[in-house]
Image (cartoon, one colour):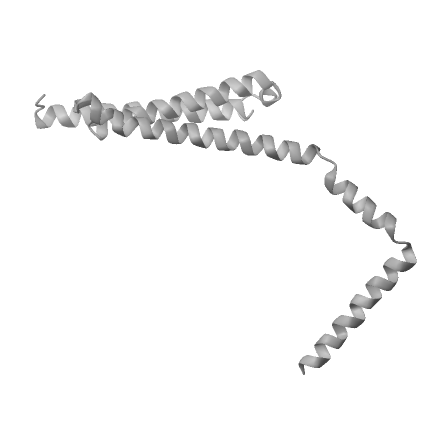
Length: 150
């Protein structure tokens, strides 16, 4: 497919306007979803999810367009295009999987009472007088350590 110089410039400007339009749509959707255009919209949870999904879809479309048009993947053989796209998709899948697993682990850790139980048990085994003596002993031992340095 041989394009003349003028046709090539026209294709570049078409791509530029397309990317600009999609970016403008993303900004408007984002402002709408955050409640900056219409107040109170950010309280509707299903609308926030739809806004997020629209942002993801538009971002993937822009990435697809940039790879296929500006990186000339449209004109390559299918095998070469798959060697570029498949690792990218696996990377995105891996990031989503790590975030999902990390969030699950963090939620389970926050729900567990293990840390709270250990603090309560440590405080219960010592009386208040014992705790004061232990704190005073730490302060005195630190003072002695500093005098040895000089």
